[in-house]
Length: 400
Image (cartoon, rainbow, N blue to C red; front, top):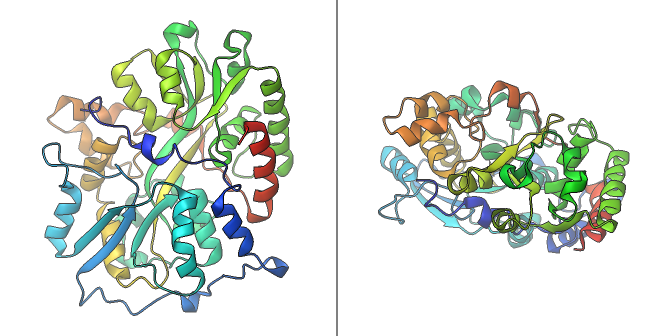
């Protein structure tokens, strides 16, 4: 089943480049005024519109391509979403319009900064971008009274990121791990630490992720840094180390998701990688391993938010809570193969009659076991006051 499907992350995460140095970063810089107060900040009292959910049974949801279950026989059908519509009578206009965080930010920011509707009731972006929306006051606080499943089943590891304590404005859609992938047969040894990437037998056969937000946390963890509270000194120390490795030609190059091709071909023996990609690669090549280093790895999410002035807030909250029903979360996890933010879905999959589906419950890259969970952390996001400086330094090293 998994081997025949295009890996979702190839589409979603491969375009994340030069964060802070592209169009989105320019837009954020333009939004910043004196005294550190964003000029486009929207106060809580100005974020909501009259909710039409009771009378208008519709909502619009913007998501990434290939990020929801699809019927194998009819790609136009999305079984979990179809079931929600049938149960509630709410018609969902589901658009796969998000291909890049910064690009989508540029698409909706003119409306949000000018207190106008975006035409969307729900959207999904990476947590580092969620941080930007939350900081600007561009998303609405959710009513947890309408979301008992989120309250009950959301993974404790994801409940309170630094950018949104208590998850008042965001709810994880799916999660993943940034760790290390390598070909054990070709390398001929195990990798257990980040520092193992710098061994002599890997010179010129290692790649790192090019995006600042994707790469820095794991590298800091290799230095023993607590990434929930890292400092500027920690960041510059990593840059010094990577800069030296680049000059020594130890690092082959910096990549998006094209590391998949390099790893599959053998041009690269080890690399920074996303857990969701490696599940797909392992279906074709069992010699490829994914490692959460002993020092730890980054747990990240792409999360649901309700933008300001959404017309159907209550319906959006209902849809979010629906996907936190363990049975629904299990059906979604079986298709997308990411880290499921609903641990209770594991027992549902384990009881499946289909053997391959049941085996997903034992995959630690979908349901991390206790030993792996103890080494996962959600990184503190890069603050707006830090981003320009850090992006300039990282991009110069990565050649962006």
